[in-house]
Amino acid sequence: MEQETRSPRVTHLSWGRLEVEGRDGCFKDAKLFPGGAREWDWSETGTSHEPGIQPADVEELLERGATVVVLSRGFHERLRVRRETLRELEERKVPVYVERTGEAVRLYNELSKKNEKVGALVHSTC
Image (cartoon, rainbow, N blue to C red; front, side):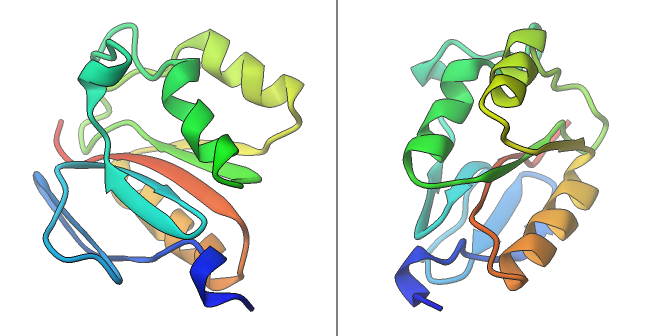
């Protein structure tokens, strides 16, 4: 296993706060991918709760080597996922899981532990 290409595990999750192994500080929303993590800034793609996660939000995960994607919808599932996003992943034959945030993080960590090249978009509030 190459340490630098493994998807980093989430070490702490609470309302508005996400911590990732190997990273100082915390995130509110995060993009996680093989070899790293960064803040998920919704303004980069114009994302909002509705219509939700866009194909452009997921693109970076794929560019960084993710072969499976986990999308979190928030603790109260307020964040939607656009149909175009799911359609694009399906066309690329990339398995995708859409879950409430707690379950999304659990699943992401489980896939990371199995050395899957997993990417995730994690929304740590609503």
